[in-house]
Image 1 (cartoon, rainbow, N blue to C red):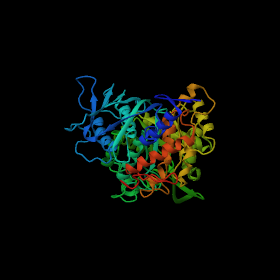
Image 2: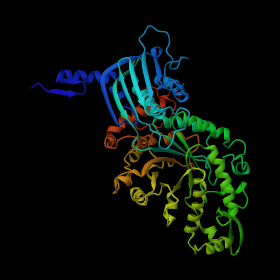
Image 3: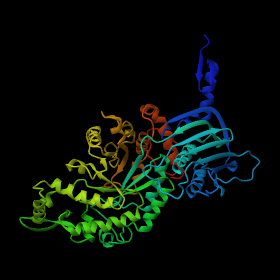
Image 4: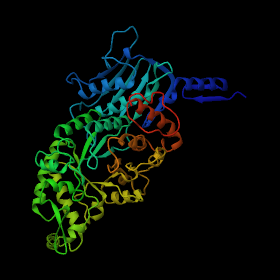
Length: 538
């Protein structure tokens, strides 16, 4: 019986099919299908085209004569030329050179000229990519979508055993499943050098994360150098000169992130997690009492003093001018009420306000004041879910980040039923060490698998990986983060119907981990094996 096999490029008899299979394995079709995160639709073919770096360039097609160059894309072309051809050293970096070879041209078309802007919460990242003989077409609505398409194209290119570069005929239509795809870094418990943060931004761009959640200050240290209140860092940082982030440092991070289509979301967590604040700002924290007299210790921010809100208003006015993103994280988690409870002046304030002995009402009162304050600065506030749990009325709240362990879908459902937007974090806490093979537990997270209406599910705007700093500094951040965070990246970008199988994802993630190593990202191994270029750039 003559069995016929039907594949994307035609119909084949059994001998022809197995010959085709050998060709596929030899030519590296697996590399074509190894794009991470997986595009929404990807059609790859066995037909392949050779690429020569000296005959390759990017062509940005402007929509009107009034448009000039695009700094974001110009920087991206240089960056992605090196990423696409890692063995090739040339000063050209994406500029056509004189050669007898026929050039391969990647033509980029962008609908909107947003080259001078910052990525926003509603920025489109949609793109279409078509690869054929001697050319590729990349079209996007915005430069941010073009950046995502350039990343995908760089992953499509592969080398044979002789070092020659190839790309297969490919058709891709792609866009993110969720708009908010974040990584949280904690720079208070351990100071992270700016270069370490920039390296993380690189790795984020490789897997299409688009939000850097900067948990910049906390109890242990206050490394943010405020121009309005310089004592906050000079007295609250681990070291006032070496372990701080100046405005120049912050601008560098924001600029570097912008060129990669990444938003920088600052968090100034209060009223708890503020011990370091009190070192540089007197009368901000609540004095704790013992047997009716001050104990000499201090608790959360004092919500009973008008001076507290005057200070916060000036601080957030500065923060809002430094960080251009329209979102700001106000924290609000894990407030210890014992110090408030011990303070007679706080108790008297609560009685005047009619709060009785319910300190959750006091915290809700404080947060509402801060939310209204930042709203006047045209900022959308994010709070940890504690505030949602404590607030009887949710009117001033806008975005709630779910972090508590347990039934995360139950928590998500509670928040969206109240009509609030949700960022999911609880299944993606990676700060604790664990075997790399447990990436599967982060991959099999289903943010929308709760009973609710379509309108409620639209309120889940995304999720983020959290890397808290108790046991993490620059020495172990990267291998602890990657490749486990890549599992969350695909869950937040790709169609879950196409990416539900851990077994099918494993070889693609292995391949992507090797790409990360070659790009200088020290991602941990997933299992036994090796990468051809595993020690290059490390």
